Image (tube, rainbow, N blue to C red; front, side):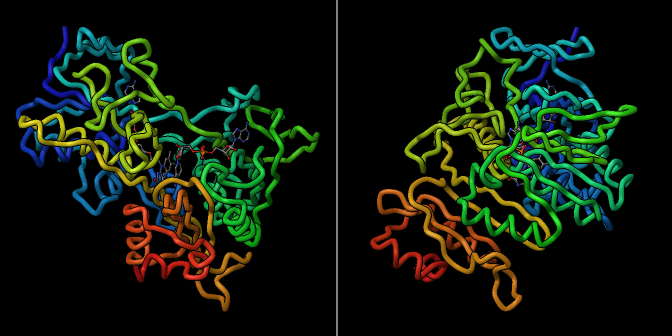
Length: 436
Ligand code: FDA
Ligand code: NAD
């Protein structure tokens, strides 16, 4: 027994919401032909809000305010919106098995759902410290952050220890955004990670130094190049974090942000994989033509990087790959080409805001005032870096840019602007992009 649909979206996160809107815009979602299955209890929402607006001490954002697609200043798709558009939203339901050849999914409630075309939008899951040999994830005051349930736990724990001590494990996106939120909520933060500096996958040492010193001025302590080896517990709570160098950090709460892993397990052995994700072509189509993959779970060729296959765990990528998959699958004429994506990452912490475009490869050329406490004269910091490879701009980072400035650096990356003289590029800085 089960239902059958023309299209099924597996996963109900960012990509699912943007795909649904695209189906509706193309009049392809009518009369119960599209089904979204999600193990979350909410209609798709803008996940980035969870580490930002959701954690504010006052005026915190809550659903339904940040359902997709408000992150792109588009329609707010509430549960009613899906109903009104004839989209079947199956919430609180986990898919436990997939049969690609048979075109069926088996849900945790025992239902078999058939499809003609499947969009896999299962995203990624937060890695746990247990994967590094440290137990404690089940403690009442140890938090990860991936979904609303995690965010509610984090808010509850944070509010239970005003003036207390938090240990943030990991110096990536989650670590940096949560540390900022915690100190804003009057919780003292010590950040611990094995790398030489924060945001090791993206930042140069110089960029990292700026943010670390900014955070330090807000009361955050950085313990770098050190591992967490265990956690002391009492009555179901962690009371201290023990480090590889023997140091003991008393803790009222712990936030773990040690990376994410794409949710590919249902398709292991059934679809080609690459870079830890489902390998797709430029139309977001997997090795089985009836399956598309989008968002965090998709490894796709980036034209701008010469077709190099990448898996990008960022919201803009989820939105755009989802839309492209829908456009491509509804294209009867075969005229829709391969996605031409400019990778775009961003973050907002305290009153800071940065954007990054392209690829951080080649020589990094910094510009602007990166001095710790930068921004000279007390103004808002504004600085950045270009990455230059083979005489062309491959990537660009900008802190404190205006919309026009961000657009200008994005355009410089998009066209692979030629750099004749790297020293001159550093001197011209932002003007290289804005006065091109
Ligand atoms: P997403 O994770 O959004 O959705 C996957 C969905 O599939 C979930 O609903 C999940 O429950 C469901 N699912 C998985 N397996 C299932 C199964 N077997 N059965 C049923 N359902 C299943 N990016 C950025 O560029 N800027 C930012 O500021 C942020 N901020 C940010 C904050 C936080 C806290 C997180 C966790 C992430 C970000 N990101 C971000 C990253 C961004 O949110 C991420 O890239 C997108 O959410 C990816 O969208 P997807 O739809 O691919 O996965
Ligand atoms: P991440 O990969 O950005 O950072 C992981 C961090 O954990 C790194 O600093 C790494 O050195 C550290 N680490 C690894 N192993 C460790 C260990 N054993 N002990 C201590 N530290 C360890 O991953 P994340 O911060 O967990 O983010 C999870 C996902 O959420 C990613 O997909 C990320 O892109 C996404 N996210 C994105 C944004 C954004 O784009 N602004 C914001 C939040 C989350």
